Image (cartoon, rainbow, N blue to C red; front, side):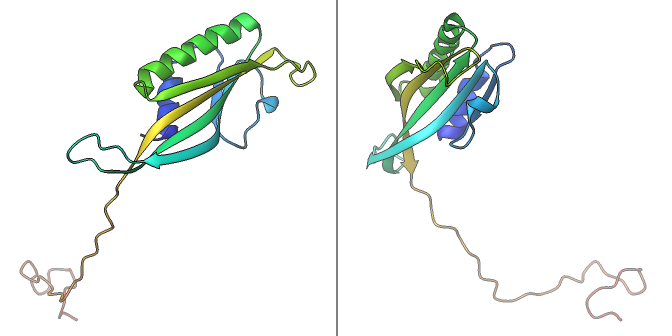
Length: 160
C-alpha cells in the first residue's frame, strides 16, 4: 500500500455533505470552497527494510510525511472533520502512522471563507523488493495449419 491507496481508503470513510478532497502537491484549496480536505505530500525519509513475513522482502522503509489541509465553515466543522479523518487514519493505517501536530491558520487574509487547519501526519510504508521483469526469447515460430482447408475462405500460411 502506498500513499495514494491509503488516501483513497481514508477519504472513503469520511462523510461530510459537500466535501471535496484531493491528494496533490499542486492543487490549492484557495480555488475551491469549504468543506475541503487537501493531502499535500511534503517529505519522505527512508530507513532499513523490516521483514514482515518469510516471503515478503522489504528493501527499505519509507516514512512519508503529509500535511493535511482541512478547510471548513466553522471551527466546529473543522473539529468534526478532523475527528473523522483521525478515526479513518487509525482504521486504515493500522497503527503505522505518527501525528506530528496540528495548527490553525491565524492569518485572517489567507482564507476569506471559513476556517483552516493543518494536520501533520507521517505514514510508514514498506518498500518491497520487486523482481526484475522477465523476458522470453522465442527461438523459432512454426505456424499451425491443422485447422485450415483449401478454399475455406480464410487465407492461411502457404495459400495464395
